[in-house]
Image (tube, rainbow, N blue to C red; front, side, top):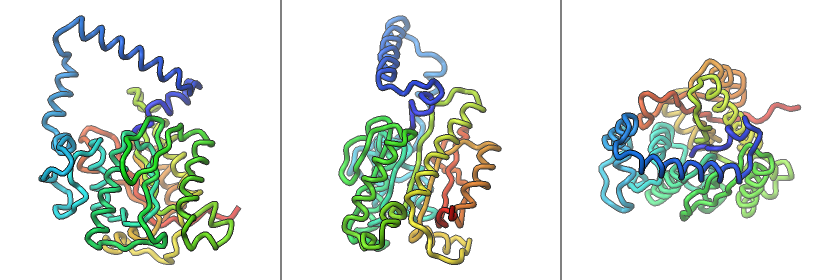
Length: 320
């Protein structure tokens, strides 16, 4: 979900696992000391607990799997893919975005970046399986269900239908491991296998979603740059792996966009609103995709600066 130590490690120049372990150990000792020193909760802790208690998405996420659910507002009432028991509240953000564009389809090759603890991957699996069971959306040219390919610096919860890699996405070798894993699975039994070396190295992923976010510092300049650094990395990976769109024209009416998103390549990225983000959208994303829009999800907290770009119809990299 978050790239917890990713950007912080870039700033300090130390990406070692040992450093992360040391920070965790220090935090544990400090927390224990505070717990013994005071029996009262601070004001910020009380506000946090109260917010969690009244949050409809936290309540829904916490319900056991298989329980009969009453979904939060703005979610598809008839969708079997929104049961309950998600490992992260953020799952509802992705589901709400998919409610609008319906890009999570059975048989698609989907990569989940910043996946830990696994809420988005879990939501993808449940949504695609529910649509497959109801015959909503047909399998693509892979001919069978594909796992969700998830990556994070932190561990992703083991779950059926998800293949995960743990590593630093800003490390080129980690990206190559992920690319090769997805390519081998996507092209192994696909008609793409006979389309030449170019297709084997590019154009085999249908959807890339990124919930990556660096730790916030409270400094808007630093936080904005950290967010954009991860967006640049996610976009770069998408440019090297997404299928090139074959639709010659684009109708921006809602029904047409839904139809396009269900068949074309899609990139979803979380980011912090800023002038720099607007520039990145205009100079990079709109250059490479037929349709780009910023969406604020109902499941996002009102005070949060986070939004999500949905980019539909990858044009392909320009000739060098």
